[in-house]
Image (cartoon, rainbow, N blue to C red; front, side, top):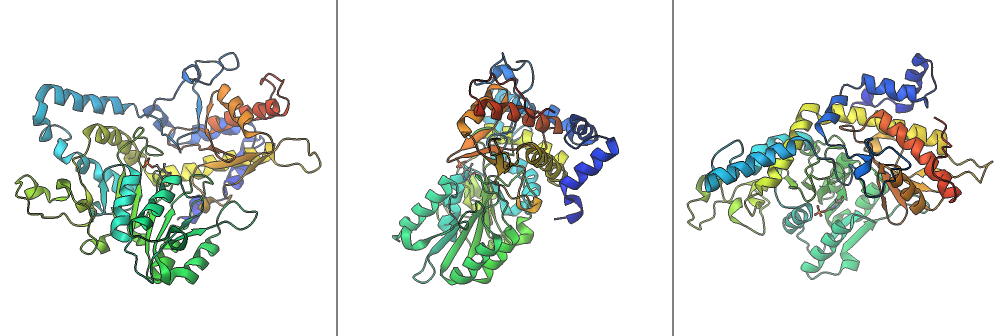
Length: 475
Ligand SMILES: *Cc1c(COP(=O)(O)O)cnc(C)c1O
């Protein structure tokens, strides 16, 4: 990462505010930063839900015609306006030419996935031959594990973070059982230290150092879905590989959020979904990566016709000519509807570039952190005041755009109040509220508005009888 572009966001905010002659918490600063934002026009590429269309919003509290404050791109990205156009193109082609669509038009269906794979490789930092677009994320994780997880008597463990996303946890459990092994003995979880929420890199590395020779696969997320922690992927990869382990990453919350250099980092395998920061729509086409160094060594355990080389695939001779690397892992012909939706989104990323988005993101999330700390830090001299704790690391190299918050008041009330006033975010059990300002379509003004609304939500949660119009963040 380029350390210069990651100058402390707080310092940039304070310096800019002082040039403007205002306080860093003044709304003026938000307007100024939006004006200066070279990426702000990308917002127009997306449909932003209006308050009146949100099922939980209360239009007696907030103007229904306003755009919502959408901070949920970590869960489901917004719809690019071009999705409909691209879907229509394929639907029209199907309606007017039927089966000829396989070979004709902008996205010949037999090359549907391959037409757009170049746009994805830039986002994950891989070569074209290292990436395939197929299936859903969990399916890809299973397919990769089938080939990378080959337990032996002495090397049979899988290392992953405690409280990994359920699907990843179940994938590992079921893969261990598939080999007739005992989950208790073969599944190794890294826990945070007592009283801490996130994992220390030093602790991850020290487990790898200690247990490495018995670990077959290290499987971490790139960005943790609950805490928002960005793991040090190059370090984990290097440490694991030095001990002879394969190292793979689930990039569901990292892709389209932070810069990735899978090839240069030497990561063995990775997979990701495309409906979070990549905005491809619920259940969108997922991605998978196998490093070039494994091209001729790692083979798929399950094979379908889409893994057969395209040059002879349609001769139907039933003599397999397997595509090399990840392309041999493809099983079925890809859904052109999913390809089209993803295409619309990836074109926007190609124009904006992850590098520029990440630079904005660091400042945007830094701005949210700054305001949260300013208004809602714990005040020990005033224990009655509600406060907000940020469990996401404050170091910008250890997080993406999401902040995970906990509250001194009942989180459900705070969440309900936010929803009523047109903020879209989510809570994850047991008690974290996730808010993700997304640099493609969120503004500094969005962040400022969120903070104002959070102020009144906390006031309501503290005195449930008040009407939500009371704003203690007088900003
Ligand atoms: C979102 C997410 C999933 C979801 O899996 P699907 O197969 O797309 O349903 C899995 N793992 C992680 C870490 C996620 O964040």
